[in-house]
Image (tube, rainbow, N blue to C red; front, side, top):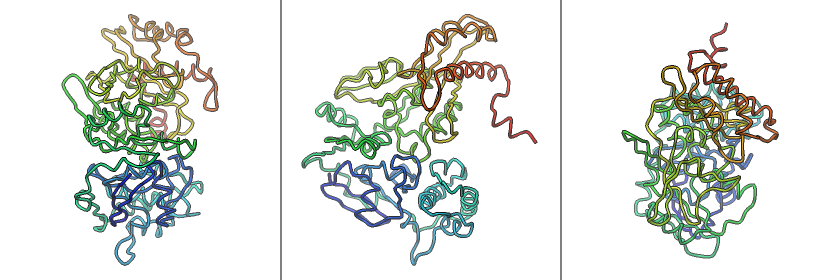
Length: 468
């Protein structure tokens, strides 16, 4: 593949790029930019964080699971590119020195890059901005103090990356010729649909937060890849009177912002969905298409009654999202068919989403439950309850829903549903939780939903915050 992008302000043109090569490996091995570290090599630790700018703004991303073709037409800055003319330090770098924010130093470059991206974007929620950067030396207090100090200083003028200007004339799609592995980069959904139909065995790459691990951890050979990141029409959000349509290429950080307005509980869960670097790359369509039984996104979408839109060339079909997941690792998607969008009915906000994990931020769920119960006159009229982590696929609690419907919205409903849970789910035991724990957690989540709906305070963190 042929690609062009900016690297620390310098125009880079690469020919015959291996589409499976990661930005991290290229930076370290070809450019000698070793400030970007290899830590976990799976997008968890943040030591490899880099800044990437495109038409949508600047984000911190994990270079270890970022393939080179995803950089085409964009601007990349590493920790070495944060300093200004004559070696003038970025405000974040200076603050890290003054506040003793570096300990062993291995993770420090990733922290600095993530902080610089937040500084550029005016993000003052430092706990969230740094949730994707892990430090085994427990140096977070001085790092947060450094971030707070840097926030008082203006963004340096030398960080004005505009790839649209610098790369003018380089907008053609990367070349797809040459021997395997081959990469394709369609410019539109129409082009993507045709490519996918002609190359049904090709791996579709959106954010690469999952596919990246196939290469870095599983060492898989991917002979043919189709990159979706240049399909701008796949990245649209339409909020109508009756429904919200979200293109499959919309990143999860944008879904988070959308749901802050429409379904705040869903948004609160998404704040714990990976970390900032992951949410900035991962897409809603990719998350659905990979069909993970422990994915946190499908349960709330199912509880909302979401519908999935699929396309094969010019033929489109849609289905209730819950019907897409057939079995473990198996989805109702034909060879060459793409996920085009997901739609959510506009409705009153009755949704509550509860994610249970060992670590608050950036952790895999033991159980993720989503509840939307419609109550009229004190009686349950309709219940939609969906879980991840409880079965081989994201799954509705149909027996529990039936037990609740038509009953008073009270403890009576909980009692009626008690034995129904085991008819809906037979969860497995693993390192995250036992089967018994998962069933009890699911029951407790319904109890929490009821108590919250009746006005009780159920947020443990909020309760502790008001205690002396």
